[in-house]
Length: 98
Image (cartoon, rainbow, N blue to C red):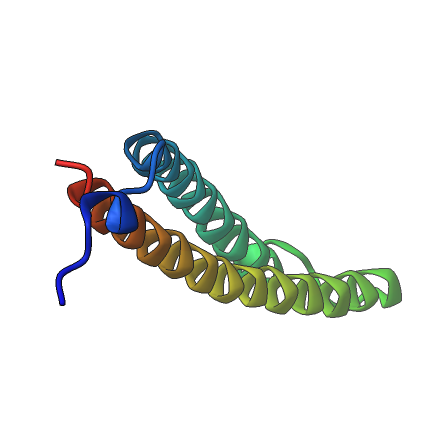
């Protein structure tokens, strides 16, 4: 039993592929920004004299913030992977239209 073209063809799939490619590109740019923010947060302790109580509190907050940003970067990588998978699925549906 063969599938008819209409059964595998997804109208608009070509557009979905293009849109998902744009989303993946923007997410990759965001990933680079988060990487830079993580690096900045992790280097703050080298630029401060940690003898003052306020400086110690700042260091603790900067360290926690760096961990949060790094966690976001990991989550973002998962989202980028899912977008790429969706893009691949849309491309396969678009191929069925030809």
